[in-house]
Amino acid sequence: MQQWYEVLFENYAMKYDRESFVQGTMGECDFIEREINYDKTKRILDVGCGTGRHSIELAKRGYDLTGIDLSESQLKRAKEKAFAQKVSINFERQDARKLTFVNQFDLVIMLCEGAFCLMETDEMNFQILHNAAKALKPQGKLIFTTLNGLFPLFHSVQEFCASAAKEGNATYSNNSFDLMTFRDRHTIEIEDDLGNIKQLESNERYYVPSEITWLLKTLNFQTIDILAAKLGAFSRRDKLTTEDFEMLVVATISK
Image (cartoon, rainbow, N blue to C red):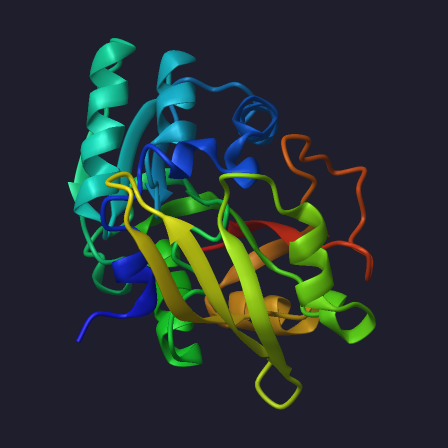
């Protein structure tokens, strides 16, 4: 049986690239470059790369990229875009819960909830972090975004999603946030690239900073910085608050 996130991304690549939450690529890649000191020798793994927006932009800037995703249609779109923009990227269909990379990358990125926090159990989410850690070389860095568990303690997730909605984009309704599990269940509706309307019952995990810190420390990450994730404008100056829907995590492994 397919999970909601597998069904969601079938034939949803062109429309996905028009979603408002994927429009911050340039500024986000600027931040990534600063974090690796513009060192073009760094090998980068993009987990949950989707249609390849970060991979392609970083490859255009001279970096060595591997992008993995579970969705065939998203990867097909990523390969088409990379070919059109004349960049060479190793795109592979892989499950982030089953990665086999060991000590191969200087940087792992998982942006725009690229796999992490979408899984149906906390154990699966942790496995993704574990595999990202395993893929890193000693002193390698992990940069990812995830949903901020502090936000729904003070705000309505449904009202926030409604206020951010734009015509032609995905819509979210019937939100139900569970304080015992920090999971938000809701109905997501999209029109896919073939014009089909999909209504899916989604389940996403929100994390509080102390959880993320503990999870990463168990995986031998030494330096862990948790910041606000501002669309297209990641910055170490933006400290996380209860007003931020997403958090940005930057961690360096000590193995």
